[in-house]
Image (tube, rainbow, N blue to C red):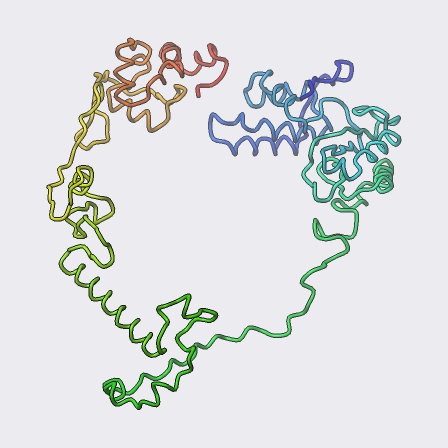
Length: 443
């Protein structure tokens, strides 16, 4: 990224002040942020100042820093980092930002840049003769689908040609920029197809009718269901066509099971299905493995060899499998194994809350959240182990730090976040001393 610097002192104004309306807006904007976080309004305030004067001056940065209680260098860092902020004077009527990223460049951004060079100034960031226009090339402005495009203040002008950009620049130069419609400059709606809608043009001719489920067929009469097979006429058995039970394009040579009459194939299939169901029911009833469905199976199907409702194999089954023995009928009581706590930890009776390992001093507790890395949850844990004062943290020995970090399971955080120095400064002079030493508010 190119280096961005403030404009020369010869063009810098002596001071900056928001207008009455903008000053009231700034106060409301700052009030939207919680106490201690008002510096987050730095970007909105800088943008409002730029909208007012056209660019961000040194005096503007100093004023915003004063309003937010920030160091001047912090506001300067923001203003020079974001390219949306103009750091030198721009045209009073239009500052044209030409997108030069790949989609726009492929669609003719180079021609738009040549127009700006001929109509405004040969070099970017320079004013035209009467100071009303300026231009620059920028990165993607977010309307790639309608490339090429330019941005003028808060509006974009898309689907441009060189001739159309000349017309737009002439209109702004004449003070008539409001007559130009922002957005696409061709016959399209936003980013839709050029020339109007091109699909789904037919008018619906019918509406969907309400679905009515079909009436189920009537059940056969009980007498017919109970009729013996012998009562069926012989002619009915041979009335079916020869290919009734045979899949299409499957010959008897390729599927021996289909040999014989269709009726015989159906009877054999029904008989085999009945035997499978009977075997499965028997295996479920007594817990023995189903030899028909699982030939050579060695594991018991009952819950004796499983834990957690059958989701994982039981210990007995695993041991039997490892030893090469059958697990059928093996039963072992499952014993719950509880790991011993690691050395240095302070487990509690309820298994979650830390137990006191330090002696808390008398008096009200300090706000430990002012130490970087300590939030509300960690503050409660520190209080639970007996740390309630900044002075306690500042005076901790290496052994006590190890003990604390082992207890709360955050090894290395005390040194990483520099707790001891922060706590020592807070214990010595509170927030004011912290600002003086570190140049910022706590956290």
